[in-house]
Image 1: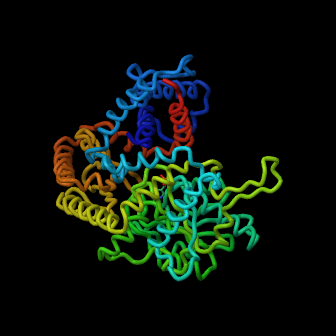
Image 2: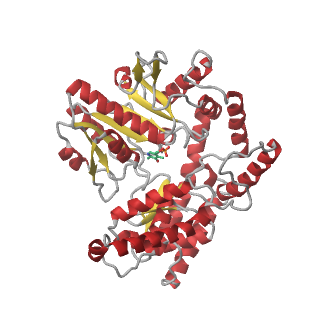
Image 3: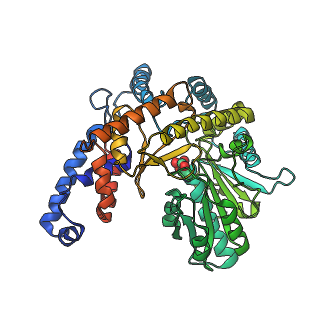
Length: 503
Ligand SMILES: *Cc1c(COP(=O)(O)O)cnc(C)c1O
């Protein structure tokens, strides 16, 4: 279950008749406040069951066991857990999440991890291999994303994931703007379909974020972007593609606008970095989104998604080492010695960089091209199948992350029915829709056909039983009408607390 869905679920338990205005008027009255808290606590208790499924089957430890467990026992617990959890994604019933997942590939990465589990890139003297792996990961990614081979202007670093890459880039632009332009009230311009990591960056680094609307094709509005530029703008952002609807923003126009104004431009290719370049080579009609565009000054690309590495790596690329330097941290007067680090972390898992490097060099250009072909062909079967269902419509013109909605049916009821058939799809809102992010898991024989068959049956069922609410449909219904923002935030925090509660 999606966190958003769970959160929405407990909102829906609140008395429906309460209007927002009434709610706002009474929510701070002590006994109402207490009642709400009680209600929330009851919901949390119920949630705990689905969030903590190992209660009773796998021993839990609130404190250290007095005597260490036998390693064989620990291993067998891990095997049990693995078996239960892999069943959820192995057969291609999950949107996104696991991008490769073939057992032989996983075993290979695990072996590489094993050789390198002690490696820490912070100690480049002890593990010069980490330096080799990371510099080559960056170079191979840059080369794939339009870096000109004749100059080595495009550079970057390896980070822990897409979010860190984005946070690093936004911090870099903030610090550059402060130093070079004395901008003390920085602003970033971001399409509203861009990843939440940009909002996180704005919050962490005290940057004002301006959300730009998207058009009917779900691509960022260039005119609105132009209007939003001020003397405090430090960066404009576009996605290739965006997470919700899988469409690519007008990167060419947006980056050109940024270049003319002397502002940074970031292409978020976290999702598409290892797909779009190969799609282009396969002949799909995709305008350039990378460093071939002179206005693009940074790109994030996730190796732990379609780079087919293990979870925990991503690449952030910059145009120019001068820009990259604003990301670095150095300190000369620390009693611990001369200290520096390229990213947010200090010590880092060199083994993940080794496994990432191994994934990239073992898959190779041909492998990525082939994987992309399979994914796009599968996505095309799925798109055709959805188009045949009269009650559904695909949003925008996506390549492989396909969002669909309905004018007649409650799309979340359709998602509920798909859930009953074992599918774990992403529910999205604003507007109400559902997406499937196609990965190599879906390219295996019969998965796409099974998806369409199940989708047709689900739509037919919802049509015949419009009142059968299912699990998540009412939740999304509530979420769409409820402006109880403070309460929702409060509940999200409670949910995170619950994640760290020992069984
Ligand atoms: C996944 C994703 C991110 C964030 O990546 P994480 O690895 O989850 O931190 C950013 N942007 C887009 C478009 C993504 O799909």
